[in-house]
Amino acid sequence: MKVTLCGTRGSLANAGPQTVRYGGNTACVEVRGEDGTVLVLDAGTGIRALGERLVGASRIDLLLTHLHMDHIVGLGFFKPLFKPDMDVHIWGPPSATLDMRHRLARYLSPPLFPVLIRDLPCRLTLHDVARERFAIGGFEIMADLVCHPGPTVGYRISERGVALAYLPDHEPALATGKVPTDADWTSGFALADDANVLIHDAQYSDAEYGDHAGWGHSSVSHAIDFACAAGVKHLVTFHHDPSHDDDALDRIIEEAREGGEAVRRERITQAEADAAEIRQRAQEDARLAVERAEAELRRRVAEFSVDMAEKIVERNLDRETQIALIENYINSVGNGSRT
Image 1 (spheres, rainbow, N blue to C red):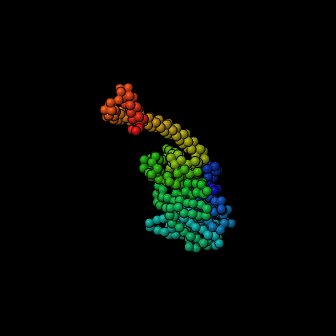
Image 2: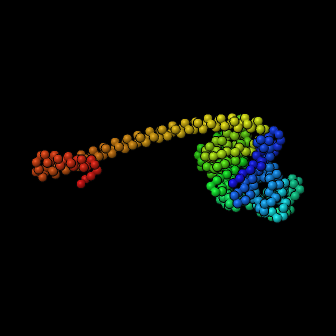
């Protein structure tokens, strides 16, 4: 699997010398499989240059996370849509009110765009993405709803045991301002769980998030906390705010990384303390279990030894033989035998 970031900016493009390292085009990612399958994730302004490189393909699958303008604004400039011999499949979240064609037509029609979606010359197929696993070429894909205004999904793309999670617009900390620790209550967790690479929303600094809570985006620290909670191997910060130039992003990410290291150390310390407490409790439970077993054994020995001693005495044996038989019986009971 080969992943290329074609657009990493959020909300509004801001391409220029001040954003050349982190990128200025809005969301678009190319994913290529071993068998040549091409997936395009979102259609922000980064899709225009990508379309120039895909003219030799015969099929393109475009997976939209949602239909906010910064994720579809590049559609009208995507060359494969204008090739008559091209199969283009567009996948996106379902809506309870309008199908995918009618929703995309709001943009691909005047006054926003001069070409109607029905007039695109490619062989276009539209899909409401299902909340279940499906296959495109050699890729296994899972989609699920995530926390962001309007119908929004994230994707998990797997090939030969390698998994890429894509959650470009996501606010897992919405309820409390912190990423939950319980996987069952964490938006997007199943998509990111143990992924090799996670591309995740990181629009705000920690200071900015408070004024934007509920807007559907994460701070860089939230992205790091989410990645740690999901056991992700590599985190790629994404959907950068248009007001953050490269120098600002360097500062924000470094501050978040230092904070994340402190949180990680705190979690490790707490985990070690929890493990020590568990070991101590286990040792105490084992000691009490042994004491209970010994007390029960003594009770049984006393109960049965008296009865057996009486029977031995009744046999009129000499005293030494009686004592030897009684001691042998007590030892056999102590070893778990009644024979």
